[in-house]
Length: 108
Length: 113
Image (cartoon, rainbow over the protein chains, first blue to last red):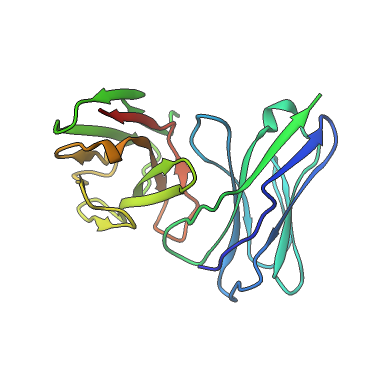
């Protein structure tokens, strides 16, 4: 599975959109981009995934660039409960390989 | 629907003791997984099962065993615990197999002294 690069941390104001970048320049054609998050002391929570097209669900939107070498997770209206570590994972099959992720802190 | 439950929530164990961590899912998922999470190392796969009756080794299987007698349960056993097995353990499941979205349980915090 391709490796991903994420910023170690970012802050976001409550009520604003949070845009979380992820680079995956070695992604191959059959690999999906997955996003999970982990709130302190809880199990990882699935957010969204996509292959080529942009995706949206009740939690977030996923924007994948045309060359698929990077993506952005968008939390449209961040709340304090969105404070967590966000993991960007690229996989085709097999184990989920979690990196260090991005620590997102939403502030009032 | 409970999803995935794990027991116990936390445990302190003496080195050399045997311990079984329990994991149960009610989603009728075929595949189940065990991960451990250690500070600075992220989540690492210990064992997995693609369907009832089958199991496979993950990235860090040594010192652990699993069984999958039925669809719902996937216990993880430490035959003789060692301090390096102090960790937070997460069970996960997915509908069909390793290409599907995995859903995680709340975790078990294990301390081996």
